[in-house]
Image (tube, rainbow, N blue to C red; front, side):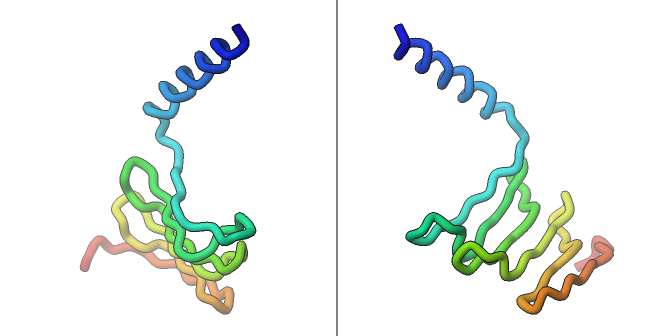
Amino acid sequence: MKGLAIFLLFLSVDKLSANDTSTICNGQKNINGQKHGVWLCRQNNSILKKERYKNGLLITYTLYNNKGEIIETRTKKGKIKKYEPCGCY
C-alpha cells in the first residue's frame, strides 16, 4: 500500500511539471557535484541566462531579455555591465 502512495505522488508531480513555466538550468557538474563549465537557464525554450562556473564558483554570466537580447554581463574580474537593448542587429 505504501508503494502505491509513492507511485501516485510521482504521477501527480509529472503532471504539474508538464504545465510548469519555471526556469530550467542545464550543465555539467564535477566529481564533487559542483557546477562546472557552461550552464544555460531557459524558460519556455528561450534562454534567460548563460553562466560559466569553475568548481562551483560563478566566473561569468550573461543575462538576456525575453527577446533574446543581452541586458547584463559580468566579466571574470567581476565587472558588471548593463546594456540597453535596442532591437537592432
